[in-house]
Length: 329
Image 1 (cartoon, rainbow, N blue to C red):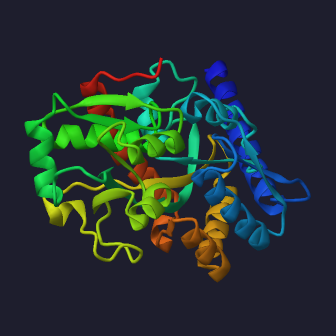
Image 2: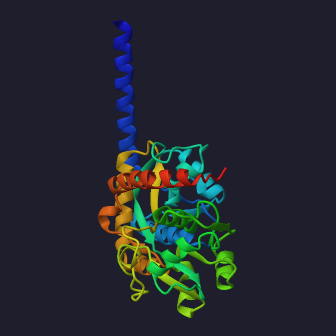
Image 3: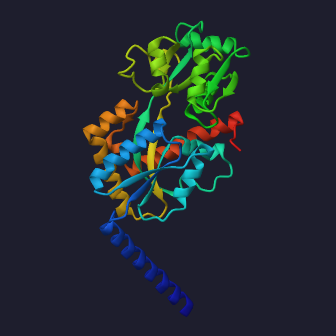
């Protein structure tokens, strides 16, 4: 009985200390310390641009300096693991694209759990994708494109920017949807892949409109459909995959923000509100649009929305990746 009482008192005391710490952290946050925002890919890419624009917008709201750190490698898992191990005080944040969900299956020996080791803050932005092919690909529209791929799957090739990239995952989703596959050709980045597609070295790919849009408009490659729910203002004549012959097919490269597990809820709430206010800033919206990204609605830039969405994306991607037998290790 005495041991039980002592254990109860110790637990109660710990709870009081945690509550006091949480309150103090929220009151002091962000304080005079700068916030580190991790982008777990190399500088200069689409994700890095989106992260820096968001960081600048949130800095104005919080009145604190936010420094973006790039730690690339292993499909973003190295930088992500660094944030998972950081102090849970709101001064270490992660911005990661939908690879955060897919890496659960691609990397079976991850040093972190995508859900259990992070506190969601909110979805930041989305980048649309499009199906494109070499300019002399024989299909005139997406229905013909799908039929041609099915009929000639043993002679065609699909290029993508490395294991776990957006172009890789879009390809896996496409092949799963049509029930066949073709020879896959991995590249070290979208740039080299796009160069070879323009040169006709492989047949087709699916990538962000930010990467392929100029080549489509220049006529050096052929576009068949965008993978968004609605048509894009920048490509008004390009149908969605859903309306052009692939019912229910939808994929965007979404970016979201996280903090280490255990970060006090008042701090998470403050960061989420700062994110929401930043996404309403006309300058932030314009700069994100200029980078090829679309800001999300206010109700999606919340911890609750991200928590549910991340789980749904893991449930979506893990079976597809495992069915394809693809791993990054």
